[in-house]
Amino acid sequence: MASKKQTASKGSGKSTGKGAVVEKGPAGKKDAGTGDSKGLSKSSAPAAPRKGRAVQVKQPKPWGLILTFTGVGVVALGLIGAAVFVVWDRSQPPSGVTDFYGEYSNYSEVTEALQDGDIKEDDLENPWVVQQTHIDGEDPAAVPEYEITPPAGGDHLSQWQTCTGSVYDAQIMDGNAVHSLEHGAVWLTYDPALVDGDGIAQLASKVEGRDFSFMSPYPEMGIEVSVQAWGVQYKTDDINDPKIDEFMDFYIQNGDNAAEPGAQCANGLTTTTADQQMPTG
Image (cartoon, rainbow, N blue to C red; front, side, top):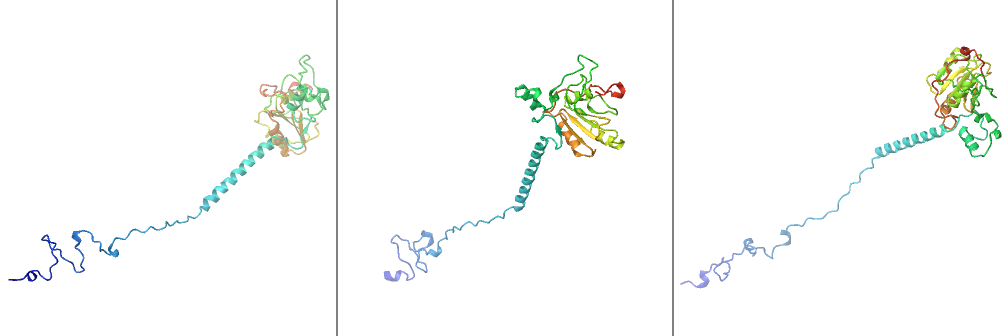
């Protein structure tokens, strides 16, 4: 009969006392099927993810766009500046113009001073700049007289000369022309003894088709060209003088210098002294 020691195999594990035998593995560890063992090595545990520092990639500056927008801005500022200059420049009368308002800049200023009682008409160096009577109202044969030639304002005839870009081939009456100046027109005159056919055509091109302007010869004027608006005048011996155009641009329908703003240039007199066989006053 075998002993208890002999019935237990040497390779067997210890009994749990409950009839189950727990086998030991070669390293003496518990079988993985029984649960996690406290004896697991640190090297066998899953590694925790490492938190790395975010890498920031420095983007290059878009110099192309920056330079483009800078250039556009500079150009825009230049255009704005140029526009402001043009507006300011158009607010100034051309140089070399003779005005007859004395210490006042234009018709509006001098009439305002009269209305406010700051001055009287007799105080003006050229009182005719504010005189606007139709002298033929009582005497149809009356002819106005003027201190300067060609005239640039003063009492005049009741009918204005049509000034819708009109070019007259003969002299017109001063009194009708001055009435047109009162409406805000510019009158271009030339001495036919000093300006030939080509020159006349060149001057006519500045007037033709341009409302509130008109042109006529003025014999014995003694200078090639004279341009008049109410109270102002410019004379030159050069038909290519750019001041002729500047004068027209500035004074045609100039709100501060129109003695009768809002009046028309159409439907006026279209005849000349040659048609009327009348004196030129």
